Image (cartoon, rainbow, N blue to C red; front, side, top):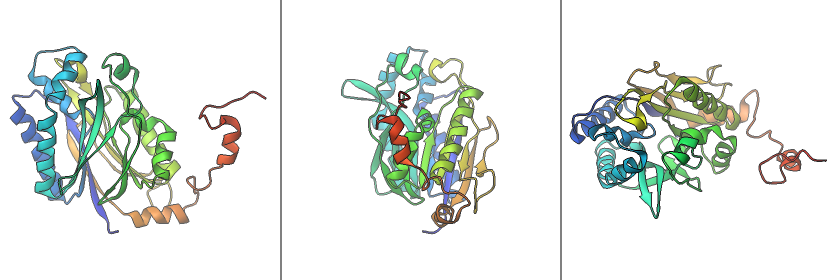
Length: 296
């Protein structure tokens, strides 16, 4: 597989004038990525929550219902953008109702009109208790121009088991759309992105929101420095950082991902944490339940 340019949006929050204003800005960012030659583009978590800036402040339950009503428009707009540009686009995440519950769902749009989805599996306390969202219960891996890709949404990246599972499913790239409202949350996600890249010897692409919208309680502020990460080992940079944004600036970052280099790392790196694990040892302590049993 040849090198593939991947782009991540460091998305800036700003007062909206209309839905048309929102989609015009989204289209502009897609076009910038297209001009740079990107074939895979990642928008951040809670992207469509920006549309809450168009209505009076509401509680989270009302916000979920409002966003769900925009699902058809969201799917149509991103499908058209993917088809028009020939890019695979992760359209951030969107709150929608399925059955009796609301889910934080990432959608991956393909130029042939196909749309794949990944629900957020690990919900933060705020998402559970304030948003009252339901968690997803499955992971998937999708074929993309940059290789086999999985989607771990923000908090999902903080769980090593999730990344190892998708790596075992064949993922070569993890896409991490995120929304963090402060530096501590951001650094948890970023450090875990880099750890997951090292542990599983794969690429991780991090996108997030920046800026402030005090009138929108659901996304009143964003803190981010988007990044594209690799293992800290040959043939990659010692710090594993392939591309990085400027903190809290609206911008687009890009980098060529080469699966051949990833394979070189997996088979010729100084260390091989993906292959050198000792599951037979770990199983003695977890009993297969994922939690250490220290008795005896």
